[in-house]
Image 1 (cartoon, one colour):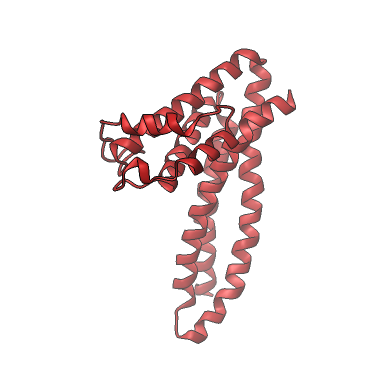
Image 2: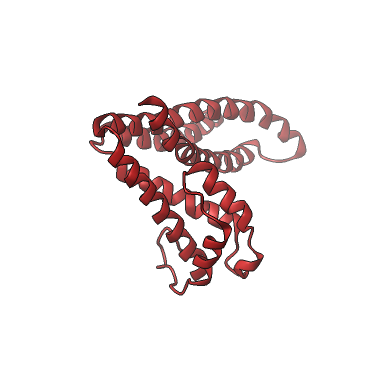
Length: 208
C-alpha cells in the first residue's frame, strides 16, 4: 500500500508541474512573453546539443544547428552567420542564469539565434490580426502540452508495469522507477517546448 502511494506521488509531482504550466498559459492575459522565453530555452538546449563549451566553433556541428533553426523558423540562417556569431563571442554568461555553463561563443550564438527569431516574430505580429494571433499563441502552447502529456501518461504506465520485473535483479523497483521517471519527465518538458517552437510560425499562418 505504501509503495503504491509512493509511485502515485511521483506522478502527482509531475502533474503539478505540467498543470502549473498549463494554468499559467490559460490565465495569462498575454502569453507572448512566455512564448519568447520558451523559444529561448529551446535555443539554449539546441545550441548545447550541437556544440560544446570546451571546443572551438570549427569543431561544432554547425550544419546540424543551422538545419534545426531553419526547419523550425523562417530565418534562412547560413552556417557562416552562426560561425561568425560564435567567433565574435566575448561575454561570459551570468552564473545561475539560463545561459550558465555556456562558453562566450555559445552564449553569443544563443543571442544571435534568439534575436533573429524575435525579429521574425515581430514581423509576423505586424502582419496579423492581434486578437487572432493571441488566441493562436495560447492554442499552440496548450495543444503541445496536452498532446505530449497524454503520450507521457501512456509511457509512465508502461514504465510502472515493467519496473516490477527489475526486482528479480536484486534492484529496488521504486528507486529504479523514480530515476527513470525523472529522466522521462525532463525529456517531456524539453519535447513540449520544442513542439511549441516547431508549431508557432506554422499554426498562425495555417489557422488565420
